[in-house]
Structures are given as C-alpha cells and as structure tokens.
Image 1 (cartoon, helix red, strand yellow):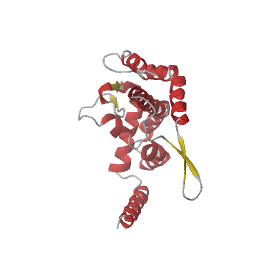
Image 2 (cartoon, rainbow, N blue to C red):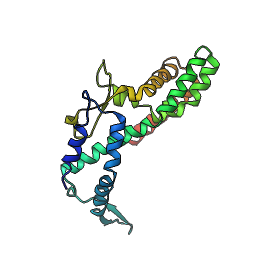
Image 3 (cartoon, rainbow, N blue to C red):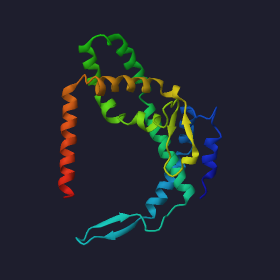
Image 4 (cartoon, one colour):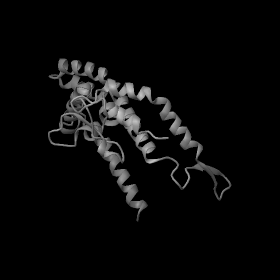
Length: 204
C-alpha cells in the first residue's frame, strides 16, 4: 500500500510553517485504523524460529516486509502520537505554575512542590526540552524528529506547550541547578555510579 497521500495531507495542513496540536490529533484519529492495519500486517509476517532449548520465538523476517513509504508513515505516526501523549499534561502544568507563583518565595513549599513533581521532571519529561527544543540556540517552536524522515521538517507551535515548557524550565532550575532536593540528586548519582561500574565490569 502507498501512504504518501497521508503524509502529504498532514504537511498540507501547516500554517506559517507549523502544525497545531489540534490538527495533529485530528490526523492521528483519522488514520488510527490505517496505523493498526500496517502494524497487523507486520505482525502477520513474523516467522517462528525454534531455539536450542526447544522453545520458539516469533521474529520479523530477514527481508523487510513493508515499503519505505509505510515505514515513513509508521515513524511519523509514532512521533506525533508521542508528542500528543506529552500534551495531555498541559493543563496539569498550567495548574502547577499557578501554584508555583504562590509559593516561589517559600523554600519549604518549593521543596514540596518539586518533590511532588519529580515523576514528571526527572522521569517522564526528563528529555522533553532536549528532544524538542534543542535544535538551535534560538529555538522557538517544537521540532518533531521523525526517524529516517528529516526532510519532513515538522514544527509544532510553542504556544500549544506553553505551560509544559515553562514548568520544565522552572523545575530544572530548582532541581538540577539550585539542587533544592540534594538527597534525591545523591540517589541519582549513586545509581548512575552503580550502572557505570556494572557496565565496566561487563565489558572487561
């Protein structure tokens, strides 16, 4: 199946060189069935291989089962689905920024605020700013990297992630620069040291 039409359809929806999140979510919904169809086709082409211990495993065939246009479609769909997932917390971050401005002069309250938001700032959104806003010193809008399709040149309006970006900039300053939770940083450093030691021992 040829999927260039779906890709060009999305690119044709740009305004001022950018895509709005609402347009992306519309496109994802419109082509969700096609996305599932391509994934099902890939799954159907997997072959069963027997292992030495008698067990078996399903693996993709040695020869590529889908076309380049299908791979581009999957990569694009997955990249946009990921950014759409990130956007689901935009309202939460808006509320958190309102809370932050109420407590920004209280060290004890700031510690509680940062601690509460560690799962977002240190885990789920840890690489968000690097992944989407590190392409230029003067990066303004979010750049969407699509594997093997750099030519697509997709940008999302920064306003769609206004509160997410603001939250992460404040959180990173408090957490990594000012080290407002030193005990948490110490745990991270210890864990990283353990991982490094394990890796060094593995490859000796």
